[in-house]
Length: 356
Ligand SMILES: *Cc1c(COP(=O)(O)O)cnc(C)c1O
Figure 1 (cartoon, rainbow, N blue to C red):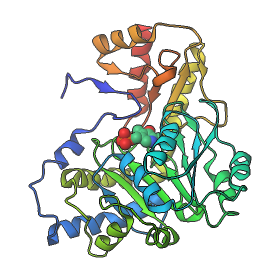
Figure 2: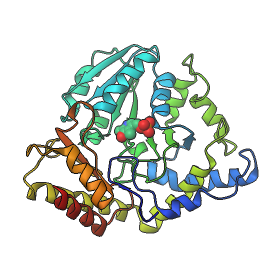
Figure 3: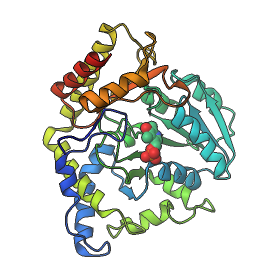
Protein backbone atom coordinates (compact mmCIF):
# COMPACT_ATOMS: atom_id res chain seq x y z
CA UNK A 1 0.00 0.00 0.00
CA UNK A 2 3.00 2.29 0.57
CA UNK A 3 3.37 3.49 -3.01
CA UNK A 4 -0.32 3.96 -3.73
CA UNK A 5 -1.72 7.28 -4.85
CA UNK A 6 -3.56 8.99 -2.02
CA UNK A 7 -6.86 10.59 -2.97
CA UNK A 8 -7.78 14.05 -1.73
CA UNK A 9 -10.59 14.28 -4.29
CA UNK A 10 -14.12 14.61 -2.85
CA UNK A 11 -14.80 10.93 -3.22
CA UNK A 12 -13.77 8.21 -3.36
CA UNK A 13 -11.21 9.07 -0.73
CA UNK A 14 -8.38 7.27 1.06
CA UNK A 15 -9.52 4.02 2.72
CA UNK A 16 -7.61 2.81 5.77
CA UNK A 17 -5.93 -0.59 5.94
CA UNK A 18 -8.10 -1.39 8.95
CA UNK A 19 -11.21 -0.87 6.81
CA UNK A 20 -9.81 -3.02 3.99
CA UNK A 21 -8.93 -5.77 6.46
CA UNK A 22 -12.48 -5.74 7.82
CA UNK A 23 -13.71 -6.54 4.30
CA UNK A 24 -11.70 -9.76 4.19
CA UNK A 25 -13.71 -11.60 6.86
CA UNK A 26 -15.00 -15.05 5.75
CA UNK A 27 -18.30 -14.90 3.89
CA UNK A 28 -21.55 -15.50 5.74
CA UNK A 29 -25.06 -16.21 4.49
CA UNK A 30 -27.31 -13.16 4.35
CA UNK A 31 -30.37 -15.00 5.73
CA UNK A 32 -28.54 -16.54 8.69
CA UNK A 33 -28.06 -15.62 12.33
CA UNK A 34 -24.56 -14.22 11.89
CA UNK A 35 -25.71 -11.68 9.34
CA UNK A 36 -28.72 -10.69 11.41
CA UNK A 37 -26.42 -10.13 14.36
CA UNK A 38 -24.11 -7.96 12.25
CA UNK A 39 -27.07 -5.98 10.87
CA UNK A 40 -28.81 -5.49 14.21
CA UNK A 41 -25.49 -4.71 15.92
CA UNK A 42 -24.77 -1.63 13.83
CA UNK A 43 -28.31 -0.19 14.01
CA UNK A 44 -28.00 1.78 17.27
CA UNK A 45 -24.84 3.58 16.18
CA UNK A 46 -26.25 4.26 12.71
CA UNK A 47 -29.42 5.68 14.27
CA UNK A 48 -27.33 7.93 16.46
CA UNK A 49 -25.40 9.24 13.43
CA UNK A 50 -28.64 9.78 11.49
CA UNK A 51 -30.26 11.42 14.49
CA UNK A 52 -33.27 9.17 14.19
CA UNK A 53 -35.28 6.54 16.01
CA UNK A 54 -36.21 5.06 12.64
CA UNK A 55 -34.33 2.08 11.21
CA UNK A 56 -31.38 2.73 8.92
CA UNK A 57 -31.56 0.74 5.68
CA UNK A 58 -28.55 -0.58 3.76
CA UNK A 59 -28.73 -0.53 -0.02
CA UNK A 60 -26.22 -2.35 -2.18
CA UNK A 61 -25.84 0.46 -4.66
CA UNK A 62 -24.18 3.81 -4.88
CA UNK A 63 -26.11 6.80 -3.54
CA UNK A 64 -27.86 7.34 -6.88
CA UNK A 65 -29.84 4.16 -6.36
CA UNK A 66 -31.51 5.62 -3.29
CA UNK A 67 -31.75 9.09 -4.87
CA UNK A 68 -33.73 7.55 -7.72
CA UNK A 69 -35.58 5.28 -5.29
CA UNK A 70 -36.73 8.26 -3.23
CA UNK A 71 -38.44 9.72 -6.29
CA UNK A 72 -39.99 6.42 -7.28
CA UNK A 73 -41.27 5.81 -3.74
CA UNK A 74 -42.49 9.25 -2.73
CA UNK A 75 -43.47 11.35 -5.74
CA UNK A 76 -47.09 10.93 -6.70
CA UNK A 77 -47.95 14.40 -7.94
CA UNK A 78 -44.77 16.36 -8.70
CA UNK A 79 -41.29 16.71 -7.24
CA UNK A 80 -39.39 19.97 -6.77
CA UNK A 81 -35.64 19.52 -7.27
CA UNK A 82 -33.43 22.22 -5.73
CA UNK A 83 -30.46 22.64 -8.09
CA UNK A 84 -27.14 24.35 -7.44
CA UNK A 85 -24.50 22.12 -9.01
CA UNK A 86 -23.79 18.92 -10.93
CA UNK A 87 -25.35 16.41 -8.54
CA UNK A 88 -28.46 18.39 -7.69
CA UNK A 89 -28.98 19.35 -11.36
CA UNK A 90 -28.82 15.68 -12.29
CA UNK A 91 -31.46 14.78 -9.70
CA UNK A 92 -33.96 16.81 -11.78
CA UNK A 93 -33.02 14.79 -14.86
CA UNK A 94 -33.34 11.54 -12.88
CA UNK A 95 -36.81 12.56 -11.62
CA UNK A 96 -37.98 12.95 -15.20
CA UNK A 97 -36.38 9.68 -16.25
CA UNK A 98 -38.45 8.03 -13.50
CA UNK A 99 -41.50 9.26 -15.40
CA UNK A 100 -42.40 11.84 -12.77
CA UNK A 101 -43.53 15.43 -13.14
CA UNK A 102 -40.64 17.56 -11.89
CA UNK A 103 -39.98 21.23 -11.25
CA UNK A 104 -36.54 22.85 -11.33
CA UNK A 105 -35.57 25.26 -8.58
CA UNK A 106 -32.30 26.37 -10.15
CA UNK A 107 -29.75 28.75 -8.69
CA UNK A 108 -26.38 29.44 -10.34
CA UNK A 109 -23.55 26.99 -9.57
CA UNK A 110 -21.71 28.26 -6.53
CA UNK A 111 -24.82 29.86 -4.99
CA UNK A 112 -26.80 28.38 -2.16
CA UNK A 113 -30.47 27.42 -2.25
CA UNK A 114 -32.12 29.96 0.03
CA UNK A 115 -35.17 29.21 2.17
CA UNK A 116 -37.35 31.97 0.68
CA UNK A 117 -36.93 30.51 -2.80
CA UNK A 118 -38.04 27.14 -1.50
CA UNK A 119 -41.08 28.68 0.20
CA UNK A 120 -42.07 30.55 -2.94
CA UNK A 121 -41.86 27.43 -5.10
CA UNK A 122 -43.70 25.16 -2.66
CA UNK A 123 -46.42 27.77 -2.16
CA UNK A 124 -47.71 27.00 -5.66
CA UNK A 125 -49.15 23.83 -4.14
CA UNK A 126 -47.94 21.81 -7.12
CA UNK A 127 -45.52 19.62 -5.22
CA UNK A 128 -45.68 16.60 -2.94
CA UNK A 129 -41.93 16.02 -2.63
CA UNK A 130 -38.74 18.10 -2.51
CA UNK A 131 -35.10 17.11 -2.98
CA UNK A 132 -32.15 18.94 -1.49
CA UNK A 133 -28.47 18.18 -1.62
CA UNK A 134 -27.13 19.39 1.69
CA UNK A 135 -23.51 19.62 0.55
CA UNK A 136 -23.26 20.16 -3.23
CA UNK A 137 -19.94 18.42 -3.75
CA UNK A 138 -19.31 19.77 -7.26
CA UNK A 139 -19.26 23.41 -6.06
CA UNK A 140 -18.40 23.13 -2.37
CA UNK A 141 -21.73 24.72 -1.46
CA UNK A 142 -23.34 23.89 1.85
CA UNK A 143 -27.04 24.68 1.73
CA UNK A 144 -28.78 26.09 4.84
CA UNK A 145 -30.46 22.84 5.83
CA UNK A 146 -31.89 23.96 9.15
CA UNK A 147 -33.53 27.06 7.65
CA UNK A 148 -34.92 25.10 4.72
CA UNK A 149 -36.21 22.43 7.12
CA UNK A 150 -38.12 25.19 8.93
CA UNK A 151 -39.84 26.11 5.64
CA UNK A 152 -40.76 22.50 4.95
CA UNK A 153 -42.64 22.36 8.25
CA UNK A 154 -45.25 24.66 6.69
CA UNK A 155 -45.83 22.16 3.88
CA UNK A 156 -46.78 18.93 5.64
CA UNK A 157 -47.74 17.13 2.42
CA UNK A 158 -44.31 17.64 0.88
CA UNK A 159 -41.79 14.86 1.50
CA UNK A 160 -38.37 16.29 2.40
CA UNK A 161 -35.63 14.22 0.75
CA UNK A 162 -32.06 15.11 1.75
CA UNK A 163 -28.78 13.91 0.22
CA UNK A 164 -25.97 14.10 2.77
CA UNK A 165 -23.53 12.05 0.69
CA UNK A 166 -20.51 14.32 1.23
CA UNK A 167 -21.45 15.79 4.62
CA UNK A 168 -22.70 12.77 6.57
CA UNK A 169 -20.78 12.27 9.83
CA UNK A 170 -18.74 15.45 9.30
CA UNK A 171 -21.39 17.51 11.08
CA UNK A 172 -24.65 16.79 12.90
CA UNK A 173 -27.69 16.24 10.66
CA UNK A 174 -30.45 15.32 13.12
CA UNK A 175 -33.04 13.75 10.84
CA UNK A 176 -35.95 13.50 13.29
CA UNK A 177 -35.41 16.95 14.78
CA UNK A 178 -35.29 18.57 11.33
CA UNK A 179 -38.31 16.68 10.06
CA UNK A 180 -36.38 15.05 7.21
CA UNK A 181 -38.34 12.27 5.46
CA UNK A 182 -35.44 10.60 3.69
CA UNK A 183 -31.82 11.10 4.71
CA UNK A 184 -29.34 9.29 2.49
CA UNK A 185 -25.61 8.88 2.12
CA UNK A 186 -23.04 6.72 0.37
CA UNK A 187 -19.98 4.81 1.52
CA UNK A 188 -17.12 6.32 -0.49
CA UNK A 189 -17.27 9.95 0.57
CA UNK A 190 -17.25 11.14 4.16
CA UNK A 191 -17.39 7.59 5.54
CA UNK A 192 -14.05 6.76 3.90
CA UNK A 193 -15.10 3.33 2.69
CA UNK A 194 -14.92 1.83 -0.80
CA UNK A 195 -17.93 2.58 -3.04
CA UNK A 196 -20.96 0.29 -3.32
CA UNK A 197 -23.08 0.82 -0.22
CA UNK A 198 -25.76 3.45 0.36
CA UNK A 199 -27.36 4.12 3.73
CA UNK A 200 -30.73 5.74 4.24
CA UNK A 201 -33.54 6.22 6.69
CA UNK A 202 -37.20 6.94 5.98
CA UNK A 203 -39.71 8.72 8.22
CA UNK A 204 -42.91 6.99 9.24
CA UNK A 205 -45.09 9.29 7.16
CA UNK A 206 -42.87 8.73 4.13
CA UNK A 207 -43.28 4.98 4.59
CA UNK A 208 -47.03 5.52 4.59
CA UNK A 209 -46.79 7.56 1.40
CA UNK A 210 -44.60 4.93 -0.27
CA UNK A 211 -47.18 2.22 0.38
CA UNK A 212 -49.66 4.18 -1.78
CA UNK A 213 -47.35 5.03 -4.70
CA UNK A 214 -47.54 2.72 -7.73
CA UNK A 215 -44.56 1.47 -9.77
CA UNK A 216 -41.97 1.59 -7.02
CA UNK A 217 -40.16 -1.29 -8.65
CA UNK A 218 -38.46 -3.87 -6.46
CA UNK A 219 -34.79 -3.16 -5.84
CA UNK A 220 -35.31 0.22 -4.16
CA UNK A 221 -38.83 -0.34 -2.85
CA UNK A 222 -38.92 1.24 0.62
CA UNK A 223 -41.73 -1.12 1.64
CA UNK A 224 -39.49 -4.12 0.87
CA UNK A 225 -36.67 -2.59 2.91
CA UNK A 226 -39.00 -2.08 5.87
CA UNK A 227 -40.38 -5.61 5.64
CA UNK A 228 -36.92 -7.18 5.64
CA UNK A 229 -35.67 -4.82 8.33
CA UNK A 230 -38.11 -6.43 10.75
CA UNK A 231 -35.96 -9.54 10.51
CA UNK A 232 -32.62 -7.68 10.41
CA UNK A 233 -32.19 -8.36 6.73
CA UNK A 234 -32.08 -6.60 3.38
CA UNK A 235 -34.40 -7.33 0.42
CA UNK A 236 -31.65 -8.81 -1.78
CA UNK A 237 -28.14 -10.14 -1.13
CA UNK A 238 -26.23 -7.19 0.31
CA UNK A 239 -22.57 -6.31 -0.13
CA UNK A 240 -21.51 -8.09 3.07
CA UNK A 241 -17.81 -7.04 2.90
CA UNK A 242 -18.85 -3.37 2.92
CA UNK A 243 -21.19 -3.97 5.83
CA UNK A 244 -18.24 -5.45 7.73
CA UNK A 245 -16.25 -2.37 6.73
CA UNK A 246 -19.09 -0.19 8.00
CA UNK A 247 -19.07 -1.95 11.39
CA UNK A 248 -15.32 -1.31 11.59
CA UNK A 249 -15.77 2.34 10.58
CA UNK A 250 -18.47 2.82 13.21
CA UNK A 251 -15.99 1.52 15.79
CA UNK A 252 -13.54 4.19 14.56
CA UNK A 253 -16.16 6.94 14.66
CA UNK A 254 -17.42 6.14 18.14
CA UNK A 255 -13.89 5.63 19.49
CA UNK A 256 -12.96 9.09 18.27
CA UNK A 257 -16.33 10.44 19.45
CA UNK A 258 -18.97 11.87 17.14
CA UNK A 259 -18.50 15.44 18.32
CA UNK A 260 -14.73 15.17 18.17
CA UNK A 261 -15.10 13.91 14.60
CA UNK A 262 -17.23 16.94 13.70
CA UNK A 263 -14.71 19.29 15.35
CA UNK A 264 -11.83 17.62 13.49
CA UNK A 265 -13.53 18.15 10.13
CA UNK A 266 -14.18 21.82 10.94
CA UNK A 267 -10.55 22.33 12.00
CA UNK A 268 -9.10 20.59 8.93
CA UNK A 269 -11.41 22.56 6.67
CA UNK A 270 -10.21 25.80 8.31
CA UNK A 271 -6.63 24.66 7.75
CA UNK A 272 -7.31 24.32 4.00
CA UNK A 273 -9.17 27.66 3.97
CA UNK A 274 -6.17 29.41 5.57
CA UNK A 275 -3.94 28.02 2.84
CA UNK A 276 -6.37 29.14 0.11
CA UNK A 277 -6.40 32.71 1.46
CA UNK A 278 -2.64 32.83 2.07
CA UNK A 279 -1.96 31.79 -1.54
CA UNK A 280 -4.27 34.48 -2.96
CA UNK A 281 -7.01 32.18 -4.18
CA UNK A 282 -10.75 32.83 -3.76
CA UNK A 283 -13.54 30.46 -2.78
CA UNK A 284 -16.16 29.36 -5.29
CA UNK A 285 -18.97 29.43 -2.71
CA UNK A 286 -19.93 32.57 -0.78
CA UNK A 287 -19.03 32.95 2.86
CA UNK A 288 -21.55 31.32 5.16
CA UNK A 289 -22.38 28.65 2.57
CA UNK A 290 -19.09 26.79 2.31
CA UNK A 291 -18.77 23.08 2.77
CA UNK A 292 -16.89 21.83 5.83
CA UNK A 293 -15.83 18.54 4.24
CA UNK A 294 -14.25 19.88 1.07
CA UNK A 295 -13.11 23.18 -0.40
CA UNK A 296 -13.96 24.31 -3.92
CA UNK A 297 -11.34 26.89 -4.85
CA UNK A 298 -11.82 29.48 -7.59
CA UNK A 299 -8.83 29.44 -9.93
CA UNK A 300 -8.57 33.24 -9.96
CA UNK A 301 -4.77 32.96 -10.33
CA UNK A 302 -5.38 31.09 -13.58
CA UNK A 303 -2.87 28.36 -12.89
CA UNK A 304 -2.73 25.33 -15.18
CA UNK A 305 -4.69 23.07 -12.85
CA UNK A 306 -4.31 19.91 -14.95
CA UNK A 307 -0.51 20.26 -15.10
CA UNK A 308 -0.34 21.03 -11.40
CA UNK A 309 -2.28 17.91 -10.48
CA UNK A 310 -0.16 15.82 -12.83
CA UNK A 311 2.99 17.02 -11.06
CA UNK A 312 1.40 16.48 -7.66
CA UNK A 313 0.54 12.90 -8.59
CA UNK A 314 3.95 12.08 -10.03
CA UNK A 315 6.11 13.77 -7.41
CA UNK A 316 4.09 13.32 -4.21
CA UNK A 317 1.56 10.60 -5.10
CA UNK A 318 -1.34 12.78 -3.97
CA UNK A 319 -4.34 13.73 -6.09
CA UNK A 320 -6.77 16.62 -5.75
CA UNK A 321 -9.68 17.28 -8.09
CA UNK A 322 -9.34 19.60 -11.08
CA UNK A 323 -12.94 20.84 -11.13
CA UNK A 324 -16.25 19.21 -12.03
CA UNK A 325 -17.97 19.41 -15.41
CA UNK A 326 -18.40 22.94 -16.69
CA UNK A 327 -16.16 24.41 -13.96
CA UNK A 328 -13.23 22.08 -14.70
CA UNK A 329 -9.99 24.07 -14.68
CA UNK A 330 -11.85 27.16 -13.45
CA UNK A 331 -11.94 25.59 -9.99
CA UNK A 332 -10.19 22.84 -8.09
CA UNK A 333 -11.34 20.89 -5.06
CA UNK A 334 -9.59 19.61 -1.96
CA UNK A 335 -11.28 17.08 0.30
CA UNK A 336 -10.75 16.98 4.05
CA UNK A 337 -13.13 14.06 4.56
CA UNK A 338 -12.33 10.77 6.24
CA UNK A 339 -9.40 9.96 8.48
CA UNK A 340 -7.24 13.01 7.78
CA UNK A 341 -5.33 14.86 10.50
CA UNK A 342 -3.58 18.23 10.77
CA UNK A 343 -0.35 16.43 9.83
CA UNK A 344 -1.70 14.75 6.70
CA UNK A 345 -3.43 17.93 5.51
CA UNK A 346 -0.21 19.89 6.17
CA UNK A 347 1.65 17.30 4.06
CA UNK A 348 -0.81 17.77 1.21
CA UNK A 349 -0.66 21.57 1.38
CA UNK A 350 3.16 21.49 1.37
CA UNK A 351 3.03 19.22 -1.69
CA UNK A 352 0.61 21.63 -3.38
CA UNK A 353 3.04 24.49 -2.71
CA UNK A 354 5.94 22.44 -4.00
CA UNK A 355 4.21 21.74 -7.32
CA UNK A 356 2.34 25.02 -7.86
C1 LIG B 1 -20.92 11.64 -5.05
C2 LIG B 1 -22.24 12.23 -4.81
C3 LIG B 1 -23.41 11.62 -5.27
C4 LIG B 1 -23.43 10.42 -6.15
O1 LIG B 1 -22.88 9.34 -5.55
P1 LIG B 1 -22.73 7.95 -6.33
O2 LIG B 1 -21.95 7.19 -5.33
O3 LIG B 1 -21.98 8.22 -7.60
O4 LIG B 1 -24.08 7.43 -6.57
C5 LIG B 1 -24.62 12.20 -4.96
N1 LIG B 1 -24.68 13.32 -4.23
C6 LIG B 1 -23.58 13.93 -3.78
C7 LIG B 1 -23.74 15.19 -2.98
C8 LIG B 1 -22.34 13.42 -4.05
O5 LIG B 1 -21.25 14.04 -3.58
